[in-house]
Structures are given as C-alpha cells and as structure tokens.
Image (cartoon, rainbow, N blue to C red):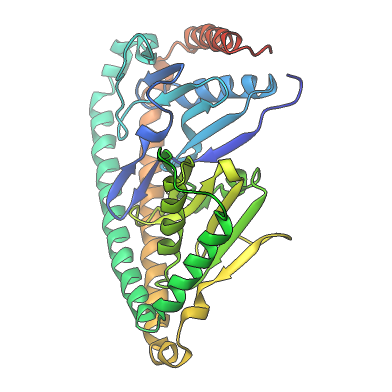
Length: 371
C-alpha cells in the first residue's frame, strides 16, 4: 500500500445551544474489530498518542477519520481506520466513554499509569480551581448559544411567513425522484450514522466539509435563508435513502443538533449539503445548486426585511460572544495541562504507543492488508 491514505475530518461532539452534545456512539459500530478507549487527565498526551498512530497508518496507505475536538479543533477526540474497523477514542469528560463489549471488542488504555501521582497531587488546589473555572466558562458560552438559537428561530419565523410550502414540497419530490429513479423500497432499511461536519470552537465555526464531500461524484448544494426548509428537504432525502436500503451519513447542525445539514449516500456516491452562513460551501463545476429562496414570496419577504436584518446582527453578536467564552475555557484547560505535563513519563507512553501501533497493524494483516 504505497499510496497515502485518505483523511476525513469530522466532529463527534459539539458545543451547542443544548450544551455539549455527543454522537460518540456513532464513531464506530459496536461490532468493530477493536475499540481502544483512552483514559487520562489533561496534558497526558491522549491526542498526541492518536495523532502519531494516525500519521503512521496514513503513510502506510490506510484511510483515517480524524474526530476533532470542538473544545480545541487542533486536538483529537478520536481516530478511526474504517478499512480495518479499528478506533481509538478519548473516553474522558465531557464525553465519558466506557467499554460496552470489554475484551472481545473494547479495551481501556489508561495513560494515568504513566504519571507521578505525588507530583500531580501537589497541584490539587490549582487543578480544582481550573476545573471550576472551565466549567463556568462553558456554561456561560452555552447560555449565549441558547440566546443565539432563540434569535435564529425568530429569523426563521420571519421567512416562514413568506414560504410557499407547496413549491418546497414539489422541490423535495423532484429531487428524491431524480436521485432514486428506479430504486424500489427495500425490505431492509439502511443504517444511519450521525456526526458533525462543523464545530463551534475557540476559533469560531470551523468546518471540514471539503474532506467529507471530496470522494462524492454527485453533489447537490442546498442554498437559502434561514427558515426556507433546507433541513426538511435533507431529512426527506435521508428518509427516502434509508427506506431504499442505503446506509447514510447525517451531519447535524452544531447550534441546533436536531437539524440535519448534510446527507451522504455512499452507495450512490451522492452528497447533499446546505450552504449558509457561517458554513458556506462554494459550488464547484458540476455541482447542482437548489435555491430554496425561490420558494419565498418577495412581497412578504420585504415586509419582514427589518426584522431579519436585526435578527442577523443580534445572532452574530451572541454567537461571537459564545465563542469568546469557549476560547477562555480553552485557556483555562491549557493552564490545567501545565500541572500534569511535568509529571508524565512520556518515554513510557511512547513505548506503549509503538506497541499499540504494532497491534493495529496485526489487525490490518488479519483483514488481508499488507503495509
């Protein structure tokens, strides 16, 4: 396998208007080859442990999913090697994860075995203080995100008043007919995998949609203002795919995880994505654009123009304030790491990483792959 593997980046959890929201159960199926749950405190090297293994396997030619951390988008919450069914996942707060099928599938890798407990205990007061401050800052950011979501709903409501839902329903019907022409309802429904393509992070809204969309031959770009039925259209397509037996990937809205923003149908090499602030996608040659604003009444839209403009300004202000506090929380987390790092046996962790990499390669060989 001389060619480098393909890297896809996603978010398994997110900072949302509902607080921290997790799709950790969708990182990999429970019947995987191996799931390694990594435990340990901040600064013990969990992300580096996964990154180094991922880099080696990618260079060996294996595809890899980077499951990025919404609290620090330069850090990892997990990695998955889909060709061999192996995942390494950070199992510490706020996304606590424990083995469900211990021994036969899941195991714990505890990096806490490599720290000097006495050294860390000397910093107990500072660690507890950092933890409290981090929790307060995240709670404050979630209050601002809830406020932003409320404003966004008012923005949507103004546009809903102007919607021609009959035309929107026809648009969805025509799209489903085009995508699934001649594909009958299946006696066995498809499987749904749910993740986030974007994250609300200290750097603002960050998305890796390009890494998700690249392999797909046919792309439909759903454009339109808030409230124009984009998520409803996507959900209808997703339901139609599952009814016809296709496995799909659903990528949810970071602000409001109840909404679907992107639908991938690997079996048809078809991708559908929303393009709207703050996660615009620029259509490429060959992409199909569906503009849901064509379903809006220009007269009614003009009537609510001032309300929409005010909601847009307020939403952006609240969202910016939320990400500011997420950034402050990251600074506290970074400070907490300094109380752990000096007391870690990183040479021992490096040795463990090499042994873990060797085991993963063995799993690959059992699947018939040769590095």
